[in-house]
Image (cartoon, rainbow, N blue to C red):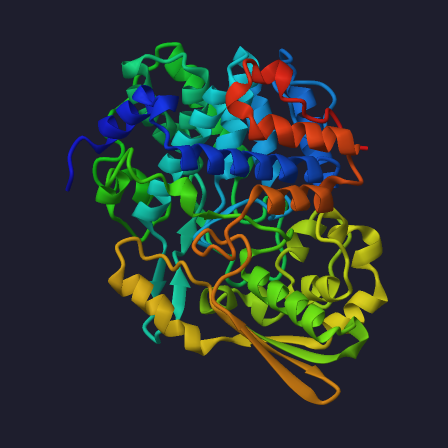
Length: 486
């Protein structure tokens, strides 16, 4: 066991400097910031977001930081709590190795603290990069996927996102720069006391989501922000919560590889390996959607030409019952986007019909459209068994036990003819030049998701501001976020 891991990481957070960030890390971090802001703007007017708005209004307090979809500012801790949930509502936020989303936590914490204190764009970038790196290292060190006795893939029986409270706190601490070295060290212990505990994992067997989907995003972000406030006031706690398996195991991990927490620390920046998503849907749907849209363009097909589609999904995705038995309808309540994001026949049908990807995919009009469900009924799923070897190699032969490829294949029947498609990567994956996200591709996502919510001049202004974020002197005044969606 490596000793003093906790203090090493705490000192990494305290000592972080913008000048130490490589140019490619700065650029990609800004891209992830813009992408996450897009997700917040697009989700701000959803019913579940309105529910959160009422919660933070009721809590009261000083007007310090923005909440997406709200006109008034709220206390920074409440803003981080609300925005972490809102950023993830559409499941369009970045995905780290198809296993977790946590840029939502990092931007929620860093943005709230930067707005509260009037910090610079460089402070925001640094907070985002450092907090993301901490979350990534915690995620990679947490072994939550395994093999069953029959060779099938299994998730840990309890799980959660409580570990991301550390990344939230780190992002806020770096962006705010108000803690001394000892306070940052105590911050880690305080987070370990406050982070939400894991819950019994029902994700693999459920066919619909509850309001919090698969994790307590608001509670996790709030825990990180409260720990920050406690540390600032002089609360002390243990400085060894990550030395050994204690905290990571307590968060539901099967076991921990704690040395990964500090391996190449400050040299390897994990944000460079997070995927950008262009659809408001689970990452396992992205490859099939890409393939279908590409095939329809190349063959000049219309949706009505399609007789049947069989999607052969990545084994880890197909392990979820909701992909094996996709529901035939989606209730039009506040959970519609949560459930729709995992309904692959539904999102594939929308893509085939040319419906612009974005929050409008979960409008009542689309959710109740007979044309959508008629096509969805012709779409079936199966497991891509050929991908099992790649997954097993990742589990058994790589230190991080993660797979960069997410292979999938499908067959599309048109006029009795089968068209076979396959792909190893999805658009937005950072591992190939062809799929790597660009400013242009994320700008197009902004248009798809938000052109009906914001004037073009505001969209252009926000893009330019984030692209030149290192020149912003005061995030609170210069980063112009829409105060409420129309």
